Image (cartoon, rainbow, N blue to C red; front, side, top):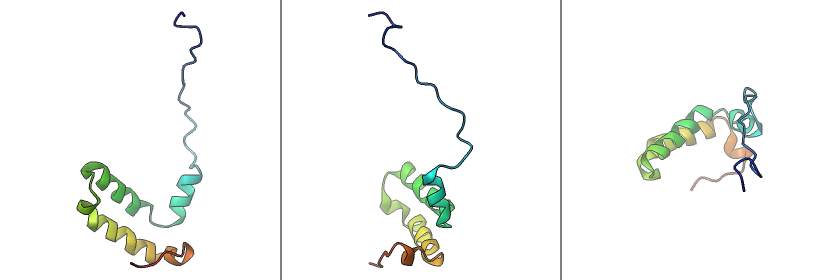
Length: 76
């Protein structure tokens, strides 16, 4: 088989300016910045135990915006 047979290159689209459903959902919580910091911490350290400060900041933001009632999450 030649290189051009059966091969369709994947082309990245440049229409990523609009937020998708996931982005809209995260932004609607009011805690997108805290979530990004928490995820970045985990990505860098690969251990949630090392990210307790960021997780607590996210948790407090989540409560402050009333998301715990909206999603029926419980304190443990």
